[in-house]
Image (cartoon, rainbow, N blue to C red):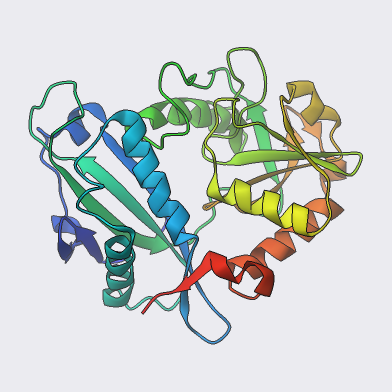
Length: 307
């Protein structure tokens, strides 16, 4: 497991990770009533620490709480306050390497019942080493026996802690079957995403990804890949994707904060591209790395110096 740094942000300030705790009577513990995001902090060529797409990660928290009906966090936490807290938790941990930061808004009210409005919340942030959750030299995926929770049940575009039981069921099934991760299908049998990453395929030089109507997280890194593809002149289609398209795709890859751009070399025991990293995947991954680390002038607005 990834190494966790010793200091966290909890509530209104810094606290040791072991003391940053919620009550067992809180809605966050009882019902999984928290929303979250995970963002990367990278080391730039000049040694500065860079936060990636911070405004978008803040907006993800705001949008997630709005969907769920949590209404007490946004009025108290501006984007500027959010970024200041992030800079502080990175500073006190004396970060000198690439890390991930998990930021959560918890409903910490005690025994509130099954509701979300007008009850107290608190913010937490903790830092951990940037250890990818998929092998970057080729991931093996299995179609899940579990279907993705539909938007009319628990919306996937809201990043809600409790909803990730769906991902746990699907990924554990894949691991038990000898694979690295799962592929979720929606209720109609179309491809959605992995347990915690978006998915892309390449067919005939065209980059294809499931549309945002397919019960998936509107990933920040997904939109980064789409912007990179547009910049590089790679044609893109966002549409329904059938499972069998993955079996005959020229290339398949996953993307996300914790996966970066990870090539997929096998789907349901079908080998993809001879188990090699495809040329489109390689080009996008190389450009993505440059963007993430502040080395790409066209996308310089995506990174923010911390401190």
